[in-house]
Image 1 (cartoon, helix red, strand yellow):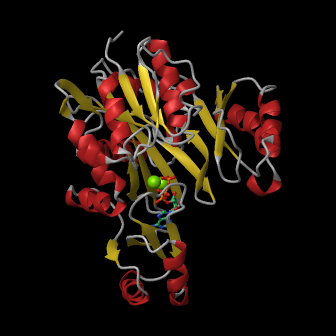
Image 2: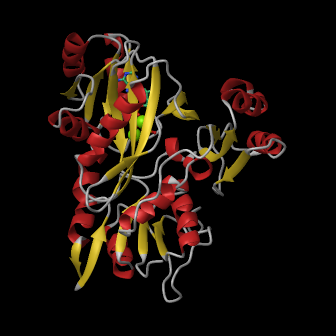
Length: 394
Ligand code: ATP
Ligand code: MG
Ligand code: MG
């Protein structure tokens, strides 16, 4: 398929790298993974690795380890945006006398990994986002901004955020100090509260030449700031919605450089307006459903894009699909196993377990995809799965 070796800068326990590696194995693309620990989920999937190469143990933040990975591969990509972009810039193009390409471009990752810079970028490209302002980690600055944007106010950590862990909803001014402590005195910014009707998302794949193709619009349902369910395609009475959402997502992804898939998270308002929430420069949770439900999965299209191969069709190949995240309820896998046992008895259902070494409350341990011939059939297949979840998560 391609004799290029792909290096993945991986997260500790990263499932996205694991699914990317699984996809690479079908295309016989050699993959080398950098992540923390010898037995990370991505390293444990049997992806081809050229015989003379071995995976790298270390962090995506460590320059030495990134260079070690860069030395072994032709193309570098990421499964997490919190990587050391200065080192990615350094190894891009000329590294130890060999051509090395980083996808997406390090400048893209650099902009996106700082959510404030990401908003400035989107705003400067005329994309719809809600009001946001820089804020200092002081009670005065937060009060000042709350005066401008109103309450509730969404305070967000600029960097290293995921699963809502860098967010604090300020409901009254008296919580300002609590917010600063909760957010660890990290650099912050504030967003106007968005009273959305629904959250939606679009995966977009960007080829090396800048051409983009979007996947269908999906509805994402969050619980405690973590993606819980995804429904594909989004159902709406507004005939223009899907086209508008896809056009916004495509324009946003075109504004960055480098190849690969991007996840565009959006808010849908009661009056039909759309705001972009944030963009991920990599495969995304809201695109897991594409493995079973689309003609080409987000993982395969990510590989095709970074390898300069023709992109695959992003069309749905089933009338209706859903994805249920399997989120740790405690340190035991028992609750998850219960849902998996039910899943195995339902037609049209595929189980994905990530092989993480420890289960923790709030940790993504796996997911389940459901495909069906109709929405009614989808709901009847999904119901027993939801009923099997522990009370507080269903
Ligand atoms: P992810 O795991 O998707 O990377 P994250 O930690 O980057 O999450 P965000 O996507 O910024 O966090 O926010 C998490 C959730 O909080 C959103 O999916 C949405 O439900 C809610 N949210 C975020 N921003 C706002 C806002 N300005 N107004 C209202 N709700 C918001
Ligand atoms: Mg995020
Ligand atoms: Mg998000």
